[in-house]
Image 1 (cartoon, rainbow, N blue to C red):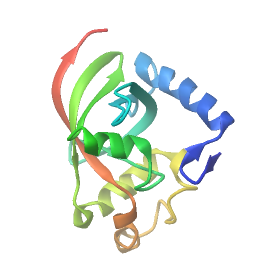
Image 2: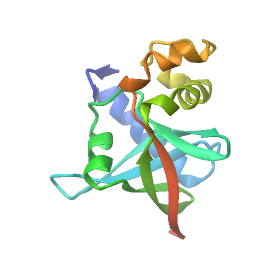
Image 3: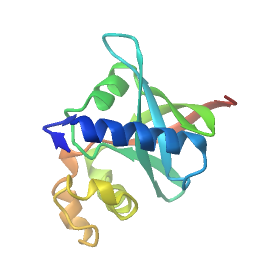
Length: 150
């Protein structure tokens, strides 16, 4: 469904469906809509994302690796983004250093079955297996900034 890092027509349809479902707050708490500002266009882009929780902290993982628009947009905006799940929450996404990503990637794969075909490690693999691929998958810690109703 993803050729390189671009979704095909079916993936775009499913992404918009899951994005809507995550933003309503009716789905499980781990599915949310991520909103980023386009680094060149200034438009707001949204996509469904799964949050991983490790030691009480929320994280977002790029299942398609480094070369995806939402990662580039977040980096260009110094981490400014919004998460929508019933309420719109302004957040800062702080990139996690590679040496700390393995347990987060493992928690993410357990929670996001749709990501498993894109990450070349089994969800039940030991942490060293995740350490070996961590550099290729950006991870961001969610830092709440403010919350407002829709």
